[in-house]
Amino acid sequence: MLIEKIEALKAQLNDLHASNEEMLEELRIKYLSKKGEITALFNDFRTVAPEQKRELGQRLNELKTLATEKISALRETFKAAAKEKNKIDITRPSLPGYLGTRHPISVVRKQIIDIFSRLGFVLADGPEVEDDWHVFSALNFAADHPARDMQDTFFIEKNDEDVTRNIVLRSHTSSVQVRTMDHQQPPIRIICPGRVYRNEAITARAHCFFHQIEGLYIDKNVTFADLRQVLLYFAQQLFGPDTKIRLRPSYFPFTEPSAEMDVSCMLCGGKGCSFCKNTGWVEILGCGMVDPAVLEASGIDSSVYTGYAFGLGVERITNLKYMVKDLRMFSENDVRFLDEFTAAH
Ligand code: PHE
Image 1 (cartoon, helix red, strand yellow):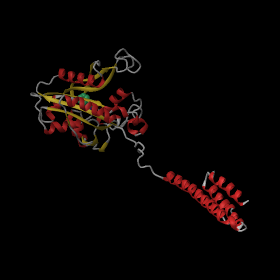
Image 2 (cartoon, protein in one colour):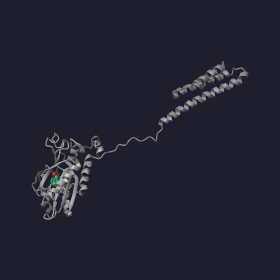
Image 3 (cartoon, helix red, strand yellow):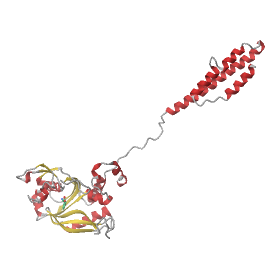
Image 4 (cartoon, helix red, strand yellow):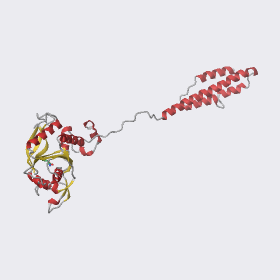
């Protein structure tokens, strides 16, 4: 009976499911295509008795509308889902961008500069390519001093007859002190940070360039006691208030007397450990009272003025603070190494 077939299909349509668009298309073909089940019922309708035509016709039309609506409703849900999938969510927070870090040498250089700035030292700068006068001669290096030799110094222009005409890569930033003394009368209180070059084989413990900070203070009545107190303050600011210092006699051509300064070992506090080779001390800088000959070479009256100077390697201090074992890490720019200093700023 047509009416039963209509009711059966109606029940099916009310419970219509499709899990994807292909399945939905199959359902459309099943019900609504030329050979579909509902189309077949319209064929059956021709044989219906005239008195039933009105009612069955209406039901049949309702069935077709139901099928059309159900299928297009399902199609809409698939379309909406596809649209949702391709939609860009502009409210979503972006992925975190990669932030660089300050280089450990820069971090420590800044710490050191800050400490000396608090004591009234001002920054001074100078060229990396220098003449012999500013790197050696004005600093009281004898003409045959080994530091002028090929082993230590990189030469830009080398003059075999007259070493004072050499052009070199500066091997220390004492050259900046000379430049300052050349055009400024005391009081002079400067620190000179900068890159320096030495002709050494590159190993874990030595490099052909590194960074220095040198300090110079010239005024009336400057004494070795002033130097010692400034260096004690510096060491305690940098390594902590319990840090002790020790000055050992040494030699530099440009200072007299000269000393090397040790600080109490930051690992064992001075008791002795493998880091300080059981001495309790680690060396951190060279210093001394500026040799009168150096003052005179720059036109400063050594009978009126005295001064002290000191110089340290930033890589060395950084090693001591952060226990970096291999100097080469500082110039290889491996971001995994640099990332370890994110918290150091
Ligand atoms: N110029 C010395 C060096 O490069 C360091 C130093 C500076 C020593 C000032 C004493 C005084 O090794």
